[in-house]
Length: 162
Picture 1: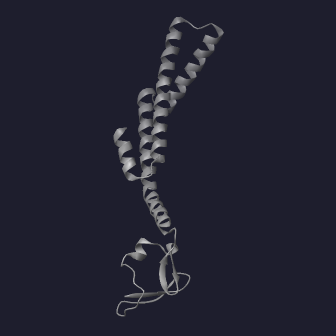
Picture 2: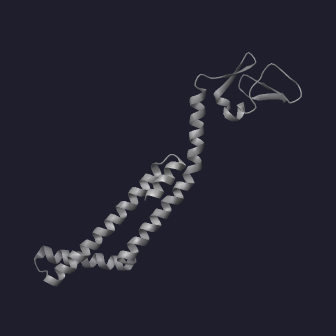
Picture 3: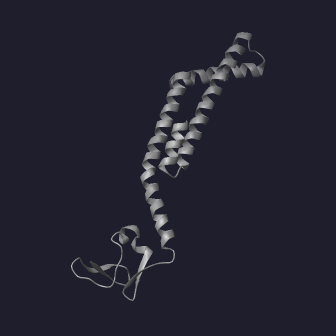
C-alpha cells in the first residue's frame, strides 16, 4: 500500500497493490490529522509540534462530545432546583403573593407599625426566602461545576457526589 501526497498534504494517488518506499503505520493518518505532518522530498514527516497538535485535536473532540451532555445535566439540575423551590414556596403566583406580603410587612416594620403576629409572619417569610436563596445558590454552583468539567469521568464523579 502506498499514498502519494503533494506538498500541501493532499493525497494525490494511492494503491494497495503496489509497494513504495513511503511507509507509515496503517493508523498513521487516523492518529495524525493532516496539519500534523508534511511531505518533504516525498517522505511523510511529522511536524515538531505534532504531538501537541494531536493532543489538542483529541481534547477538542472530547469537549465537543461532552458539551451536549453537560447542557442536558445543567438543565436537569435547573429543573430539580425549580421543583425544590416550588415544593417549598409554591407556584409563581404564590411566590409573587408571598413576596408582596413580605414587602408590605417590611414596610410596616420600617414604619414601626408592625404587630407581633406580623413580625412572626415576616420572620417566617424571611426564613423561607432564605431557604430559596440557598437552593438557588446550590443549584447555580452545581451548574457552574458541571460547565467547568473537561472529561466524562470528572462529570460522573461530580454528579455522583452531589
